[in-house]
Length: 383
Image 1 (cartoon, one colour):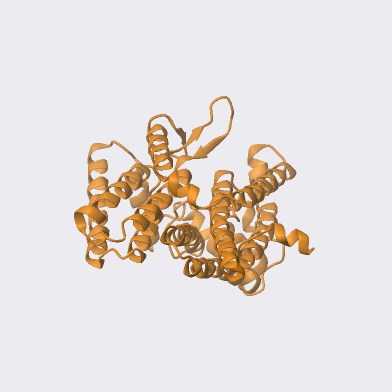
Image 2: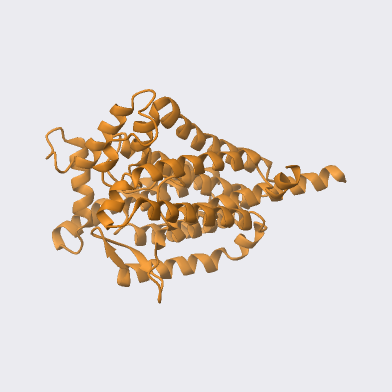
């Protein structure tokens, strides 16, 4: 057993928490894909096997990536960012149109699709972490330190925004957190946040009056539905069904496989899987453990960052984990009715392909930094 544990280096708490998330993911998806199988004319077993397969591949990615020295990401940061920008532009022009949005690209010669924004999130966070680590002496200077990284953040988030507002918002917010930790002046950050709101308003107004895109209509309608008490019941069908599922679950839940809303709740296996978890396991065994798992993951990222004697790995860990936890909180907020419907999966728990694989990449990088830090500490102690 000890020999096996030695293979999994880095923060052991994170490894254990990922095991718990895998268990939650397996049982929740297995319970919630019945309606999907019925609609697709397939069978439940096929969807479960597919999901377990992605989780297995994800674990392989985590294990392989956690052995890669973090310095390689710094040297490849610019190349990865350029590739992400090109991919985002390609997606807007030639991507797969699904659910009134063009977010995915199809790998030539296969039927496999993936969301380019998942890759762009990873690329931008690596770039910002590298930029901040290399420009700490000039970061408080607007022209030399702040403006260059602002242009890059605006470009990437701007390319994601037209088709995926929630992802652009989460990525933008994650970058704000990184910039704040990286000692950027608060007045610059406040100005950046204000500029983002103004630009978003202009974008919506232009789109609404020119008819270039229908996406801003979707955003506005979702906000209006969320805030209005007199909204059309058909338009609030998803959020109402999620609330019913949560109410049915109560404190202790209805037990595994006994959810009733999984049959009628759209995206019960993805965007609203948190509601199904609560219906079957309740607040005590479903909601609270999941919330605490993500919060502990964020705390462990802070522990790893404090151990780093270099700024790049510290920024990298905080950025990647903040993005994942922020996405998780948005998903939970949507399921519980606190936020309008966004379409964000619950990291590592929701059924999905690219979401699981890119979450695995992020967790592998975080654990790789932790492994490197532990090895450096061991060398110092041995000396």
